[in-house]
Image (cartoon, rainbow, N blue to C red; front, top):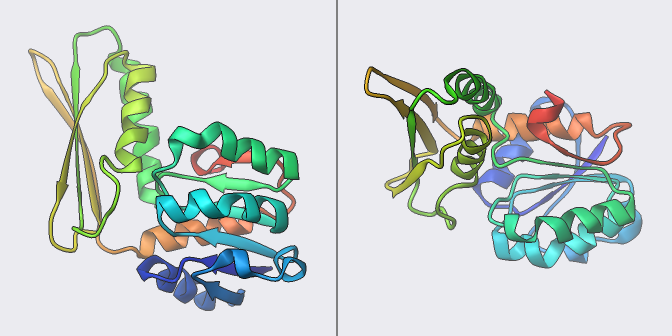
Length: 219
């Protein structure tokens, strides 16, 4: 498998390290993915960790020219329909996630199950997400995904609090509270390494894949 990284910031470097550790071929790491030769792109999976604005500009090129795409950038859910259509029309497989950490995806599963069990029993929900001061979107995509799960399964809309401090890789806490008790589900990332490992795992899943998938559906 050949891969190209779109976005060569901290996450791009972490993905590069994970690719080397697994012996996978990195063709390029680019800050200008639209400058990629289409003939080369067609042989490669694109792993995208850029910014919301960059992804909005780049996704049509990625959809048209790459073999497959793994999208780790968040902050584009308002144009989800347009993005999905671009990849579907091009026949390019796409895996996306608000968070590629395997631990966070286990958290999603736990939140879904807990919300199913507690539905209709009077619990209210609160979400707090804490990230480094460089993060551009708030609330985080992961917090929005947690809120969507709670709304769908528990039937209540959580309050989301966003905190930006230091170099925190990511902490997400869901609190479910009733008159009788409180349940807390929490995930803390120690570094960006877990996101990179998950993204590379997703890239490997694109082999022989068709369609558009959320990472959690494939685990």
